[in-house]
Image (cartoon, rainbow, N blue to C red):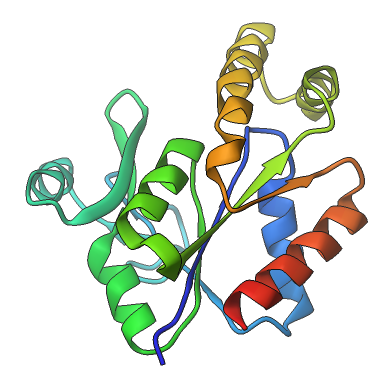
Length: 188
């Protein structure tokens, strides 16, 4: 039996990575995390094929040109991240359910490519004001970066209807429980 692709997307600061971490900590969902590709150098302790598929910039660009990615993005100038088609196709062919933590446009593209084999979940903040408060509370970004993230969040939230399901993260425990139940049903 073929596995499923679970895509979780959200604006920055909505708790997407935290929710995914808690879902894996629960240990009862039959899924594994997709290993993304990047052209950045490995950090200490990172292993090729485990943490990322580390490619040179030329290798990454060649893979883009050859259509080897189901989604990719230049996240920062000259810094690329993407999901290799072979990574996903091989996993679902083995019957594995794969979870992708990717941006909204990537999530929409994966759904277009895989149709019903992909299930997309959008994590939404309770409001833009609450999202701004959370981003400011992190203390990691400048006011300009926060403004950029909040502006982008408006666009991303407008794309939520293209996803199979939306979970509003107004309470983390509740959002994790909702995401768990939705994904458990999706992967059957």
